[in-house]
Length: 289
Length: 269
Image 1 (tube, rainbow over the protein chains, first blue to last red):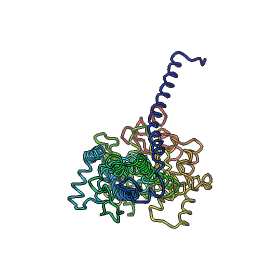
Image 2 (image 1 turned 30 degrees about the vertical axis):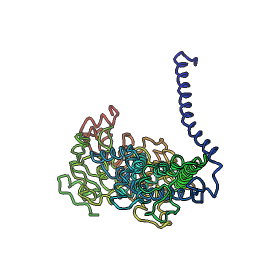
Image 3 (image 1 turned 120 degrees about the horizontal axis):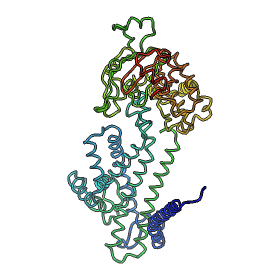
Image 4 (image 1 turned 135 degrees about the horizontal axis):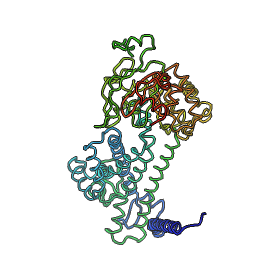
């Protein structure tokens, strides 16, 4: 009665085959990540110390620490987040909750997606033209952060838009039917349910922003400065640019130094991501928003 | 709200002895783009009656309820013609549609437990109305859950997620949420399709009680449910209001249109 037919056996073999295939693909993806991390720890772990993190580079950047670059990256990421998250979330709420489905919003959506595909060097040149020269911000944290924010906006908008769209229409209708306005519905029902998706977008953006080099090297990040930034109109060093400099621009750098800088950059991104994840868990645990 | 206007039409004479009209619909038509889903519907719903609307799928029943609540505003392509009078006021010309919606409670075919606590589900409408005092909210939440026959089952887990309740419980939660608006009219759209028979009977008992306080519009595709609950019933078919009459009359075969008899006797639909 339950004997497997030839067709049953064939179907089972095929499904096993696909299971193994997908497992291999996944392993293939994880392998480089593990390889990068272990290499960095093995080759750069030895230079990491409190002194390395909190002192200035010395001897033409062949020795000493990376503090100005570390602090600069934190500045750049924070300021660009403060610009891109409110803007991006507001735009996504408008596109998802207020705007009707017409040719205008479709063009905007298309433009946003295309913006995500613009190469970062193009953003960099735009940043030089718009923020450094036209708005006269000079090469500064503000100009660099604005450039980074423009580059990150599409990611924030798309992630927010999609997590808003994932909230079932039935929830909105239930709320509208009670006499709630659009904004009351967004604040009480839609946003609390979309917030973890929005934070995922922000996390992605933090990682990208911290690692970008091209958009900041003409707009606010400098090769070397012994001064720590005091405000958004100062120039600054940045980890990503510093890594580029010590790897390719300076001679006689000890071999483990660039690996150490890369390790700190990755650790910083991981730390920021963990903070966002913790915040997400906290929001989810809280019943009311 | 303005009191119901006296009738000036020919049928007004018989209405004098009856409760005032809560909702009146004149020549209502509903289109989605070019597709007409409801055409030339005129009917009156009186205070404190359970008004049944029966009919097969695509009869226009749900669209009818949407129009009463001005949900066409939120439905792309939906277009409503004709007049809808709520307490004698034409709601099509109303600016403050939010006040209208807050006077009408709605229960959907599939239960919608909002992903917040049971307490917050029921306290949402009062909060939207500006009630902040915790004691007042506590009283409202308990009273509404009790009236929806759900209090005993959830009183110990008011802080668990409303969306985790069983289907039947969620439907009663939806009713409790609708009651928390203190509605003048309660509209139920096929409330029992995702609910077990025992819960259905409990909800039906609740509705019989609620009738003393409010007007109820019951859309159902279970003709026997209309028979059990409704004083008067309308039969919708393919966007047409075929017949309106006393429920008992419709079920005892006193019909003007033979399609009504065929439908209530289960010959089609």
